[in-house]
Image 1 (cartoon, chains in turn blue, orange):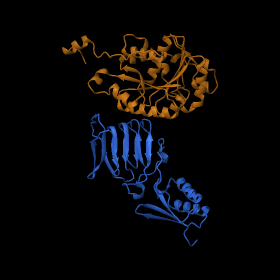
Image 2 (cartoon, chains in turn cyan, brown):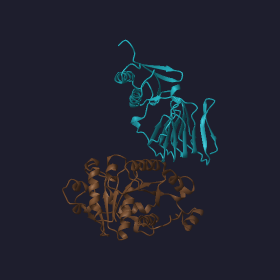
Image 3 (tube, helix red, strand yellow):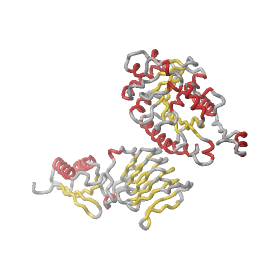
Image 4 (cartoon, each protein chain N blue to C red):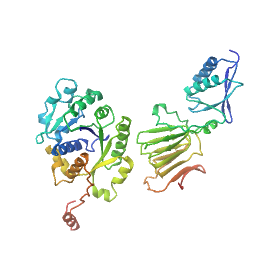
Length: 219
Length: 265
């Protein structure tokens, strides 16, 4: 085949998916599948593509959306409404790999979805989300939260929390009582003091001048 | 109305079997018909705590494999006729029983007994899954120690995933003097982390050990603090509203002796 039906281009604002609108949906599907399968794991789960094609009809657009979502990816539509996603803790097997050293994916950071966990996360449980995580309960010792965005715990946080896991250094971690075993933001790690102090006010952890700092905040 | 209760903990050595034996005897003393099932196949010891080892003829494995009727395998308690024990095998391992077997067994026993108490093995593997399968209620036993609380937390999570939502907590082996001096986690810390209904706080008591060696659970012993605590738990299981007792730290006389350095400790 001489002409490319589907081209993926990386731009400053993310990835663009260029589609030849004269091709049939089956051809496009096959081509996208081929491209994604050739480099499995190249695009982190949750990556959104901007669709670029002259007059694609609705069913073809929908078809492309479906095939992308089968691969854990999505279509970024202009002025897309973000639904409030409520999800249960994902089993570890489905958790995406965390890039070493917190590689920046500029296009990824803007796609925020909030995961709301409406119960206490107990030891041994793990919550992974590409967006931010809100926990309506405690995070117990031995539990883990890995979020692409920020983490807000409406309770006591004693587990391990990793915000901005895919490189977002502006991510923050907030808890009513912040006493985690470890705090990670982007590619930085801070561990708890060996003797944990018990504070009764909300605190926020964020990166300032290349290190993780914790400050009290008003709730 | 009968209730099937599993006594579990995650960590070993926190007092699951001791609690099972004491609650069993305590409920029987109150006139309830009780059957205890030991599911710690290969490491059975509930029979020892009850002093019934020499009376065992058949076991849980014989029952689930259909060799004998349940009734034949039950061992009656020496003192309380309405207390029965279904021991397990010391030679087989946990794979000899599966969750479906236990569910059938519990439903069978439920018809005739007021309480079915299941002594769960330590761990979160097959033995645990089997033990909890037929239960309506779970009692999680822990002690004021970080590793025991951590494991209890994990177990509560596992119970939730198996859709066992009626979970109660017993904090065992508390040393009041150590809690007071801040060397041991206090009850509020534990309740704060585990956040489930606490139905018992049992102090560490040497009488638990001596009574285990004799095969007579401590629950009937009014001189023992642990015995009192177990009696209170029995009351709470039967729906009574009993406040948690204050622990006696040291007797006045002992304190006086200590002041004059007569006491050995």
